[in-house]
Length: 468
Image 1 (cartoon, rainbow, N blue to C red):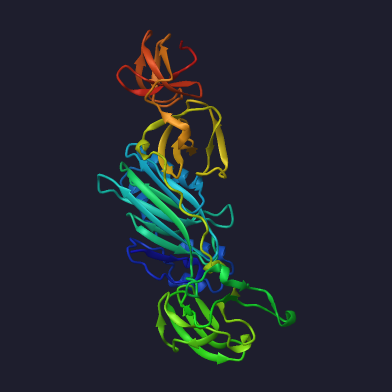
Image 2: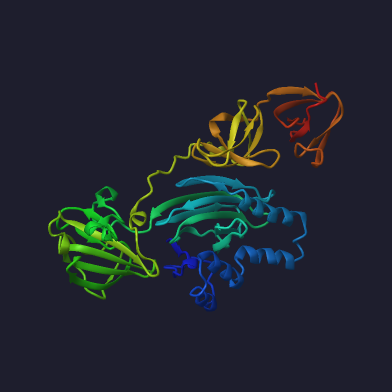
């Protein structure tokens, strides 16, 4: 069962709030201020001052109250959450990723998503863990001003499964997934875009629209306040959403018309030029119900049968229906990356391989990497691994360009007593001491360090400068 969330900052009410652990609801005083404060960003700033703590924020407060906030583990956990938001990957939709978050290494995953006007975001989030794990799943709106903080739209403190969010005005959003301290597991995130409204003519789609919004009418004296969808006479005309029929009439302009009130989107849906109406005023309809049949009544009697379809929103008047009807064109990429590598290490097979901000050849290049660079596999999306570099940097590389680190690329004999460290850095914790003459297999290289395996079977880093 899906949770459907609408953008509260646009003055609409949620259609369903089932399964939610906690929704962000502005108090009545803020709703009243929305009427007098101009600009959506200003409204959101007011709402931020009055909203309750999200479950994530409440968990942070509990760490403070328990005296744990200043521990190294808690600081790392909070830093991971901030870093995930700051470095959220700008992913194209639709998108699927499966990944692993380790319990001993606090981590978080975040994705930056662009939702055009008229589209809705559908998200399905799951986590497999051996323990009863508290997981925070949050959706934030990215404000128009760079100086403003991300604004929480909804926050869960357990896996929500499937949920939807419909922003009326569109924009950018960030979805973050982070387990509580000392918990982890294998996660799966599937994100898609869908049209907010069902197509109103049975068996037809966008190609049937032959007259678009804003085209001149009556010699330019007025503009077209909808779209014309051409179909055979008698083709069923459908409710594009759940709602209430608030008017059934016959007019000179529209002929036989039906007005449907959509309370979720605060909109009135207009059907005109019908051959006949199938509903009465006051009827409640569900998405996909028949409200009438295609015709050419009214001032369309000299044209082929078609439906004039309009959307009117309080405070805006007529809006272009096409973005609310148009389905996304892209399909979900098949996940072919080897998920058996999740949580493990791989290395690059060639020199100059590009680390990208998102999976795909069109994604921005973050840096070029050298051959045999070891990478920790965090997730898989399509043909790409989501990876973390030895210095903490993250991004995506094509999975086919990596190989296992099990087979050494070199064999090193320790020439000078050295220390094997947990990271390729002089300040990193020491794991073991490597004595002169010790032969160690080299599994990879990064930034002047060798990734090696000790005689005890430990893997870590030693300086490459003084070895032979």
